[in-house]
Length: 159
Image (cartoon, rainbow, N blue to C red; front, side):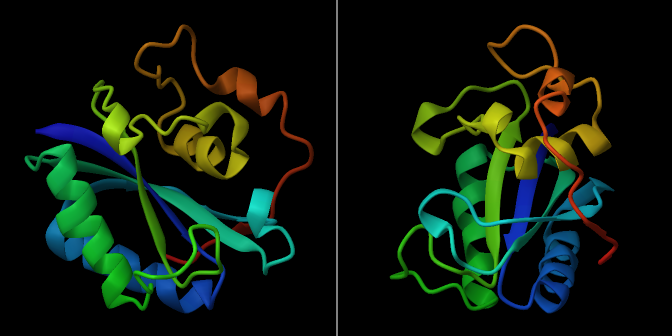
C-alpha cells in the first residue's frame, strides 16, 4: 500500500462540491486523514476569480499513481461537473490533484507537485495532517514554508 496525498479545491459552490468529492473518495479509497479547508485567493492566471477553498486528504492505496490520477481523481472531477475542455486555470467546481505518491518522483505526472513550497494552499493543509513530512529529493521539511506565509487564511470545517 502506498500513502498518497490529494489536494482538493473548488471555487464554485465549494461548500457543496468538496463534501461530495470527499464522500466519493471515501467510496473508492482508504482515507486515513482529512485536513481542514482553507480559503485562498485565486493565484496566477486565475486572479480575479472567486476565492478557492482548498484542503488535503491522505489515502492508502494499492493503485498506481497513474490509476489514481486518471481513473479516480479525474473521473470524480468529471462526475462533479468539471468540463474536459475548460482552460487550465478557470473557475472550477472541483480540482483534485495528486500532490505526493509515497516517496516517488514521477515527472510525467508532476508528482511531487512541483510548486508545493510556493503554494500555501497546498503546503498548509498538507502540513496540518503530516507536520514532519519530507518531500522526495528535498532536504528538510515543509515547516520552513510557514514562515513565508503572510496572514492566516480563513478555515472552513466542511467535512
